[in-house]
Image (spheres, rainbow, N blue to C red):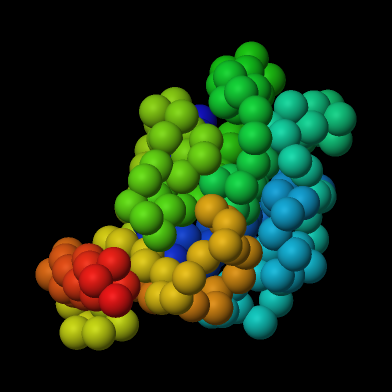
Length: 187
């Protein structure tokens, strides 16, 4: 079984992942992973829980094979959008090794493009929980992450500069950006 929690930033994906973890009894049969590039927190951390969960840092999904034990029955993966690799690893672990897998990650970038390997993880998931945030501007339900400012890289780890937007506020922001670009060209 593969269950994925996804949605925009600030929507509670990691909170849902950790709530599932904290509700499980036998922690010795659980392994937790997070991307090495996510340096924001030690382990898996959510704004809603004071307690964090230790996690092994990996770069590629295949790295999981180096850590699982015969007794591993459940795997948690935070911020999967930052990982690389072939998602068939997750299928193998779930189907052939009978391990339940819980994954969370952003479904789209702040440019509204599919984020990393997340589309492939969503494709093999048995269950998908899509979280919504609230629009930073109007408080409606928000499905989009938006970056205010200039980005030098495709990926900027952390919360700084990111906001959640509803469709209407995203359209308005995009219109503002087009106007700014036109003004720069005409200067």
